Structure formats: structure tokens, C-alpha cells
Length: 212
Image 1 (cartoon, rainbow, N blue to C red):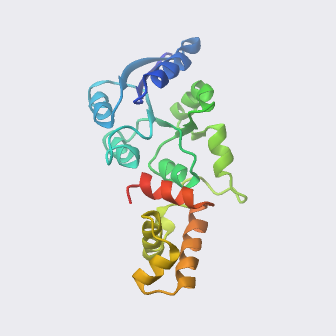
Image 2 (cartoon, rainbow, N blue to C red):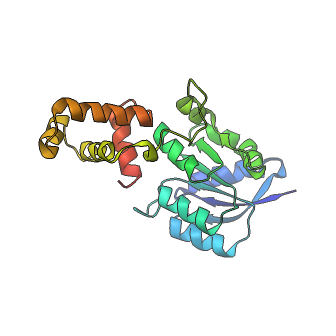
């Protein structure tokens, strides 16, 4: 059987590479391509397909990323979806899988796994690319997407991260919120631990990509 796949990415070179990977051994045929979230949603509405492979970030601030994935899931609840991304953020990976995405792979190198990943998501199995697995590996083997997400944060912890990602120092946040410096520092540390983020750069990326 030759499977019908829709591709979405704003880079033509990536679309070409994905098409070539899918054409190997006659596994699949590309029935449509999109370069923006709106174009993708329009294409999905009129083009029957067996699976979707899409980029996470496309040039449509506020409409790509998790917003787009949630909308795809709402409109097409049974469609197997695979996300390809240059992101390397474990908390964002968990948020992506939490939308119902079955496949998640990195663009650098992992694209060679596309045929195997496609077969897995068509069988309703979760497939994580090698670079993704390395980054989200947990010592206790918790399922990806079940913990370490936004839902685990308290309102105060989320507020601290928002203020920090906006460029405020821990000292600035303490003054603005009327809390002690040690309290703010502890809440920031607690939020990072819950999200399993190790660096400030990961916090900035997480808050930005979630449009928080």
C-alpha cells in the first residue's frame, strides 16, 4: 500500500528532502504541501490523506506551534501527525506530544528516520527520533507528555517564569511582587525542576514558543 501524506514546512529544501525520504521503496506519495498554518488547515480540509508531517514553527506568529497542533487535532482527531523541528527543548517536546502528536523527530539527522516513523504513527504508536529520545530520557521511565508540562506549574511559578523570560532578574521580580529574594529564587528553581529544564535559555525558549 502506498500511503498518502501531506507535508508542511516553510522551507522548500526541507519539503524536497521529506518527499525523497517518503518516496524511498514506494512507501508513500505526497498529496499536498503547505508552507503556513493557514495553508495547511485549508489543504487538510479538502485533501484526503493518511498522515501529516509538519514543521512546528512556521511564519505565522500566534497561529503556528501548539496553537496549530491543537487546531489540527480538533478538526482531524484521528489523523496521525508527525512533527519535525529544530527545537531542542525537553519541556516543549512534552507539550507537543501532549497535543496528541504521535511522531516527533529532529531535523538534523533524524529525517533519515522518516520512513520508520511513518509506519509507526500509522500503527498508532508513538515514535521519537534519536535526538528527541536523548533529550527527554528520564531515570524513572515516565511516559513523555504525562509530566513535566505547563500543567504541573503553580500560578505563582508560571508568573515567575513569565517575568524572568521578559528580561527581569530575580531581584527585579522580588521587588515587583513583594516577595523575598529567596522565595522567588526557590519558585524559579521549582518551576525549572518540574519542567526538567536546566538553563535560563531553555526557559526563554519555552515561554516564547508557548506564547506565554
